[in-house]
Amino acid sequence: MRSGTDHLDILGRFAPGTDLRAAVDLIIHQGNGALIAIGTSGLVESLSSGGFSVSAARFTPQRVAELAKMDGGIVVDDEAEFILRANVHFIPDPSLETGETGTRHRTAERLARQTGKPVIAVSEGRAMAIVYHNQRRFELQPPTELLAEANQSLNALERLRRRLTEAENNLTGYEVHDVVVVRDVALVLQRATLVRRLSTELEQLMVAMGGEAQLIRLQAADFLEGVDDLITFVYFDYVKRRPKRPERILELLDDMPGEQLYDLANIAAALNLSHLDSPVRPRGLRILSKVPRLPDPVREALVSHFGDFQKLLNAEVSSLDQVEGVGRKRAMQLRNYFDRLADFSSVVELG
Image 1 (cartoon, rainbow, N blue to C red):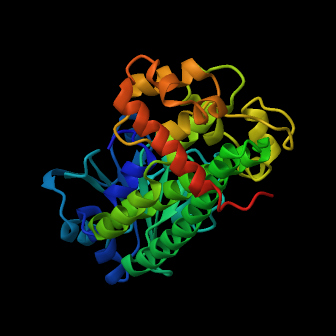
Image 2: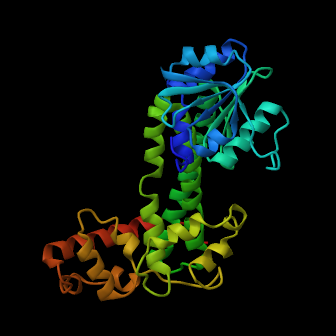
């Protein structure tokens, strides 16, 4: 496990069913505490005092649990395949700030911050384990708690996705009736971004659950399907200048602080749009993306030819046929699609 390993990789290394997690669980079951550094380097060595080297000892949960009965810490290699040292006294920089109170956890947090290596602190009195890595910390929760929390997040994700679908359907109706204002656009982007953020939080839980998360992962993937494309298409439709990188809106929204995301005016500003109540008209890319088996080049040609969605929506078959790549048959299919779209949108209540 290298110092640059990201947070999700580390969560996965301690998921139920892994050797690291089995070692931690066994230590807790025995009523012991432990301090384990995952990975070695010159800096780790310089912050380690005393103890003894363990020659060619493969990592097993049972061996680690036995070594944890001694007072000192344990050092294993970066991949947690071998035990390197035991009964070690770690001496990290005492000037490093820490919010922990117990000696073992304070040492673990400072050691992790100073070395960039993950460090596990198992509390003897509280029967709990916390993993520290750089500036992060996370408690190893029992599988039953992880499952309950994941199901709760999944239910919230389902509700939020329904609200997103409702906002998108309303936007479609407003586009057909040519009564869209910036607020309608920002609302879709807001809800889509919230779906993405909640799915990211759920992903952390699923990684921490390991193999127990398969069913939840499938359900979460269904709720997230198409959300990135929706954000990109909406951005393309409404930004004033045709963007060279429509996917850039994902970066802009991802970087927006949570408190700003709940203000639709901030989203409008990210899109460089006008006041929330200003009328706007889409180019039509999002609607065309829903036409079955319509190639991307033809979709782009339609948007470029007509310029805005109202012209496209009201185009005759002969006008559609003139666009390169469309042809008579596809032009009739598009006209049919637009007519059905108008029928669907008639049920949308116009505010």
